[in-house]
Structures are given as C-alpha cells and as structure tokens.
Length: 297
Image 1 (cartoon, rainbow, N blue to C red):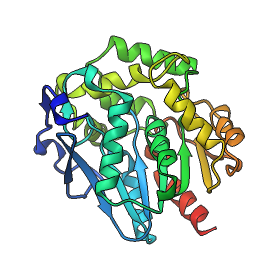
Image 2 (image 1 turned 90 degrees about the vertical axis):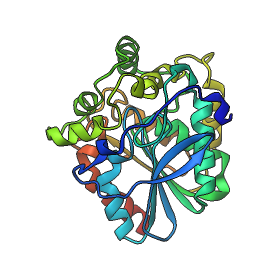
Image 3 (image 1 turned 45 degrees about the vertical axis):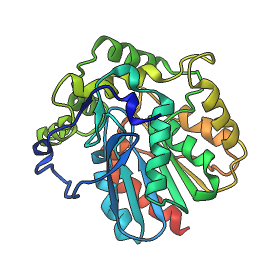
Image 4 (image 1 turned 120 degrees about the vertical axis):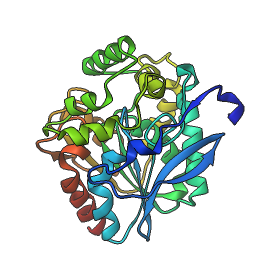
C-alpha cells in the first residue's frame, strides 16, 4: 500500500476541534502511507496502546488517558485513517482491514512501541489483536473489551447495525454514540464525536467499517482473523477481559465468554455494570481503575 492508492482525501478543519470537553491534548501527527495520522502520546513508562472502534476516535478514551498516564504509564492512542483528526480518504472502497492493519503497524513502528499493554474495543479488537499476535515480542498484556473475533460469525444486533450503516452512509455520528451509551450525553460531548465528520465525504471510513466485518467464513478478512484466533488460543501472557452488561452488539456475558474459553491466560471476565457498547464513555474512570489494579496485581 502506498500514498498512490489515495485518490482524494478530506482533512477536517482544525477549528472543529477547539474547546472539546474533557480533551486538552495538543494534536500530534505522523505520516503513514501518504496520509497524516493523528495520535496522542502522553506520560512515560511501558506503553498502554488504546485502539478505538467504530465510529469513534481517540476522544472515546479521554476519561482513561489521564489516570493511566498519572499512574506511571506511557499512553498512546491514534485515530485510524478516516477517523478523528487523521486524514480521511473519500472513496469508501479504499477502506479495507488490510489497509487499517498496515497503517497501524507503521504507526506503532514509528512510535517505537514495545512492552505494550494493548487495549481494544469494537473494531479495535481485530485491528489491535492482529497487531499483537503479529508482534508478540512487543506485547506484554492484552485488555479486551466489547469486541469479537470477527471470523465470520456475527450477532443479530451487529447485522441490524450493518444494515443501518449500509442504508445511511451520511450517518449521524454523535447520535450513534449517544445511542450506544447508558449515559445521557451532554450536547457538547455529542458534538465532540461529530467534530471530525462535518460532511458526507468525511464519513466514508465510518460508513464502510461495518461492511468490511466478515459475516461468513468466506468473507474477506475471515481467514486472517481465524489465524489471529488460533494465535490467541496459544497466548501465554496476561489477559484482562472487561465487557459491559448492556451491549446489544456484543451481548453479555456470552461475548466475553468466547475469549475466556479461547485464551489460556484469560480469567473470568470483569463485568462493567451500567455501561453499553461504548463502555469507555459510560464508565471510563472505572475501567482505568480496573486496568491499573490488574497491572499492579
């Protein structure tokens, strides 16, 4: 993959990101595959890498970044191509699992990430777990939240979401986030999730993500993720599972139990009570506490 693959790119204006509630991180950028990629890199020590999902950006982790960094960790979060403050190719067909994975690998290479605790949720699961199993020598631990193996089996809740995304490419991002939380989000928080996506063309990556989830064993990406699943079945490093109790896309407790049964080092899942799909938004501080307690233990 090269920059030549990108036909047209939308770059969200900086003024869309002024005075976002709870977000005081200065933007940092690097170049990857012809795109400008935005990232957060704060604190020092062994890194905790936060992988966001669909249709969010690093803002989703704002309640966790500060506490994790204050406890003595380097915290890294980056926006995938098409999300947040990163460049957004406007051709939906540009977006593939392999492209997201290639940019992820390049970004974490450039940032020199090693001895990492990898934290994943939603689409961060397949992207982050693929990177982790491809680079086990650079990963110390996994934290897995509200995601799936994406090997071709999906829930009825996901199929409903996929159908909605296919029918509504100019999706209302903030409204979707609000609908995936237990918390009643303040209007300015909803606006912060909308901030990266002011036009239909800026939403190409968000619109396409649900359609590249493998929904059968024959779907593109299913074979690669089956290999990731196989690698996880032999994983020998610590794993924390934290799934919320009110997520229709990844129903509790069944979705977390899949990982408990698969990964030898995964214990019983921690239930994040009073949280829906975007559990970082609903209970971010509590999740940070759970991670820190687990790391210390």
